[in-house]
Structures are given as C-alpha cells and as structure tokens.
Amino acid sequence: MKRISILLITVLALTSFSCKEKDTTNIKVITTQEMQSLLKMDQVQLVDVRTPKEFKSGYIANAQNIDFLSPTFDQDILKLDKEKPVLLYCHSGGRSAKCAKKLEDAGFTKIYDLQGGISRWKHQGLTVTE
Image (cartoon, rainbow, N blue to C red; front, side, top):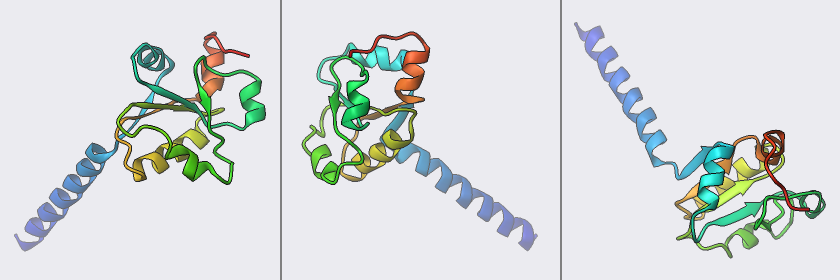
C-alpha cells in the first residue's frame, strides 16, 4: 500500500509539473497559414533574424531585419514593443526559436515563431520581396 501511495504521488507531481510548463510559455510555433492570418492583424511586428545578406536575398513583406548573429542583437530586440505580437522567422527555424526564447526571457508575451522558416514559406509558393 505504501508503494502505491508513493507511486501515485510521484505520478501526480510529474504530471502537474509537465502541464504547468506547457501552460506558461508565451511562444507559439505557427504554420505558414497561421502566419498569413497573423500578418493581416494590425500592430504586429514581423522580424527576420537572418543576416543582412540573407535578408537581401528575399524576405516576407514588411519584415524588419534584426540579425541574430549581430553583437548588438540582445539590445536590438529590446527596441521592439513588448505589448504587440512579435512574429519571427529565419532560414529554417533554428535561430528564430533561440530568439523567441530570448524575447520571452525579456518579458514579451505574444511571440510567434514560423515553423520551417522562410524555406518552408518559399517551398509552399508564398511571396517574398527582393
């Protein structure tokens, strides 16, 4: 009986911690279709975190370029408005995911990360500006 009680308490504790962690994130990974819908909203901040060279090769319309690899990156992202949604993308999703975490740590609450980055965007035939 004692073993069952300990097992039950352990399972409940692990379940509550894992559920709590999922509920507290402000980062949502989104599809290209969701990104298109969000871009129609007012007051969104679209951020391309690729290098300036990558940005010049084609970007999603109205994106601002904040280079994740720049030495001033941490200061540059703090210039964004914490109250407005931030939509992020990079080449394939790695840098934007790291940026999303930095934004969350800085107190941003509405963070959207494009799954697959601009590569998926282009692969699905969606428009880029050059």
